[in-house]
Image 1 (cartoon, rainbow, N blue to C red):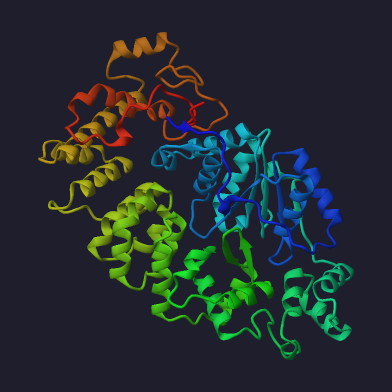
Image 2 (image 1 turned 90 degrees about the vertical axis):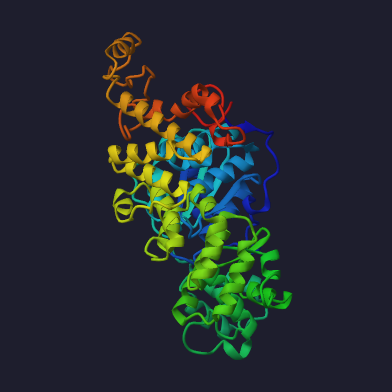
Length: 530
């Protein structure tokens, strides 16, 4: 059960940024975006980096008067759906959600997103969705299918090939010369014609490249090659490299905790050049600039990388913690210390695949349990099968996770043996959890077999209407639009822990009753407590 507070003011990280002060040449695109926005729940603006996709969306929403829209930039951390759900939960004042359970049930996670957005009739911007990879296609398909009153406006580099989005994708082309001249005259009214012609020619129709060229020092405007990073001061180039390494927007307080904090003049320099954009209380490197910086080679040393990692680790956001782990990957001791503190929280937040990329193949024993937790969160049997079992002297939590992995791989006999050993052990908390898992396993197998172990119970299920088309054997109606996942009884089995805990609560050892095992009220089809 979730507890809802009244809708509250959005944190800065989810607020809609202001549109650019100079916006020209997109009247036709604004009209087409309005048509798509009014026609269906998902509208997409696609095109190469630097053409002004986000600027178009921000200008449109300002024209629309949607100042309370929710802005969710995709990050290179995986599991964007969980980031979107958290943003909507914060916007709706919703707390005490069972995030680990939602991470394991993709249908429930998207149902939460749709319910929260529909409840508030939200307008949500999903920015740079190409970073979400294949997850973006799955998410947009479901949002376009089930959202009704809410609206999602997406920016991405690659147009999504989704049947339900036909007619909803606006592909931006390069700005024409007249629009570029209008932008240039507004941004740099004293520019001479020869320099303006050169900047327009180099921009290739991109307002970002145009403004960057015009912001170059006069003595650097005529050089050859890529102009984006040309003429930067040493400190400004170092800041660009740090932002490239981090891969996420860096809040001002994080910048202030760096080993060599950038001065306000340096931040102003990269902002004036158009290399970064202000995302509320943080600055983010533009994707085009990131690509150029990576192509030219990054120059920070290991000490700088660790300094950035330490600053990010103190933020408390899962995406910042993951970025810190990536920056610490070359130092096994630093990485191990960080993940011992925050690893399980990252798995619970849905970053299992990103964690697997960090620790899945590391040979050090300290990473083995976290690799197992990440593989369980991903749900990939191939990854689980690649891991070796824990030793007899391993922690009870490690052995419990291994029992879960055995169940996930269908090796129930081995899982039962592991759980029996833990159930008879001296650790009261592990003993209770092992017995609980054993009971759940028995109940789920009983349901999947239609109650065949107890013929009388199976007949009672049929009298309640179970077993027929569109219904699981327990008699609960199944939405025929939802695909079957993991067996006919999955929808009912999601709620099984509550039933078991109520019957077994008298066996919980004193002081060992985890919050996630407490009875959470009546069963509901949605994680939102209405």
